[in-house]
Length: 462
Image 1 (cartoon, rainbow, N blue to C red):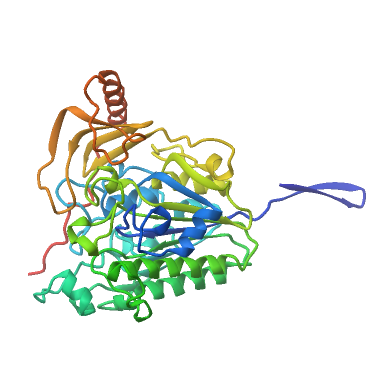
Image 2: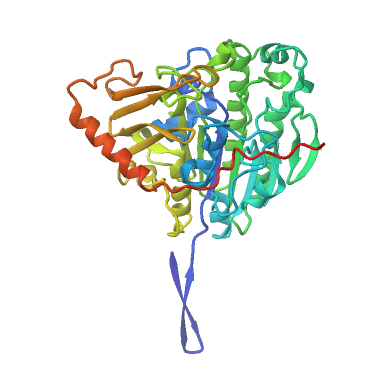
């Protein structure tokens, strides 16, 4: 902060002039696997823009989401709180559906709402999936504007006798009667998913361009609805990748990242960009479902492949402390981090599960996150503390294994030695298991019962 001394007719005035607050862009994919980017080891998918972000910014190798499926994961990112605290998870219905009556409660403070209190312009572009009724949409949760689809791109499916593979191959957009919204108004139904990534990108770039040079800093949440099944891509990306349709989709998303960064660079206003995904790959769909790389399992599981996501962070014009970050981080940390960078403080009237990662971004200290809690629905399945992770329950991929397996004693892995979770070291490590169990018990003691938002349904009309 600068202090300017002004002399007026013998009076001395001290005027505080605050530098403009930084801008924020969060780019969030859907079902992107840990191994799906070339900077995270994919051999045939090319992601030059994300690779450049990683080289000139930070590549996070132990960055987690709040859940292994869409709705609870997004609730965690938006609120900085585990979904068990606001009813945005369920053992009966894993996510919100078009017949769901619930959504993110108005009592929750989203990143957008917190930043609006700090005089930010806010926009959401892309998939929301935190409630499709008007009082749950982004414009009711702190966003000035919204353009996108309200839930997953495979919902409102028209039963045409074909599977997701055939619908992607034939580009049958009418097989999914998903609406495209602007604010609360329906623009198109079914949404033409063949150019959805391009339209999201155009909308995002337009918002950034309009906001640059303005009096308000901005926050953009760009949530791609892909590479979630069904896969669609613009005609310019047909055959673009040697990795097939899935590779085409990822390379179009990388193109989108490039366009966003290109516009960000048109201004000297400090801007932070975060790229990550909501959960791991949907392995049930094989080559259309992506890869978790060396990590075990994918979407729907609390194994590493379900909740550890490829994450890169970047800033302009003043760069981040460059390098590979092996410290733990989480989407739960975004709200407290962005609020801190904006000069604010998180409210003290509720429990937060996120930490301020500013020291890591600026190279002044390590990540304050030492533990991660792995929920499946409403149940705590696993805990990581330091390099050790204990599983009391396990379940395989989404729509795969139906019943969870119970482990007593729990499975134990050293994620530094064994990130693939192949070698159970529970034997002769009772002390570590006891320590992790205590951390789990202390955490569960902070969780209070709340109304479940995923289990209520809209009554059927007679």
